[in-house]
Image 1: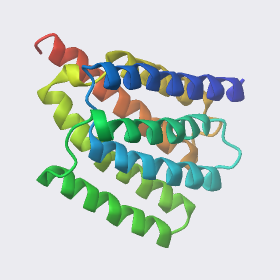
Image 2: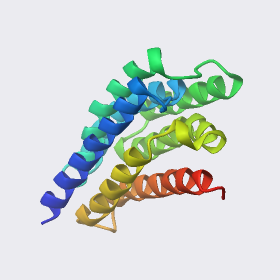
Image 3: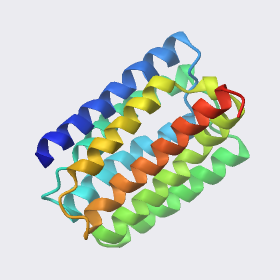
Length: 188
């Protein structure tokens, strides 16, 4: 059962990249170059670290799906995105770089936590952009990712271990971003 829920979570995550990619090419989605550069690199490291820290986890499908999708979104962000060299972007890129260096110096559990910190830093440019212009992000993308995060929480086998850390973070991030998009589009 846990394995099936994890696979569904991964499929929903990959599916979320479809409206994001189409929206980037056709508009009005404008992916943040800094966010997607950080997330593309970080996704590979999160997947490797999560797999090393929790090799038996059914919740590995979201990091795997996100690795594939983040690389594609970064490539789309180059011609269709925005930002990349603002002061905020530079600080986030530097912070992400520092946590990635730390990541390589520690074991898989601390590395996973550093990866989550890198992911948070990477989310900042997109969160700021979305707060200012909620139509610059795909509502369907974040809804699919939010549903994937829920399935990923259900795929966790051991809530007493580090296995729960990344899925919990993913749920908080997707809930926050989906809420910002919905709330700001409705004038909240």
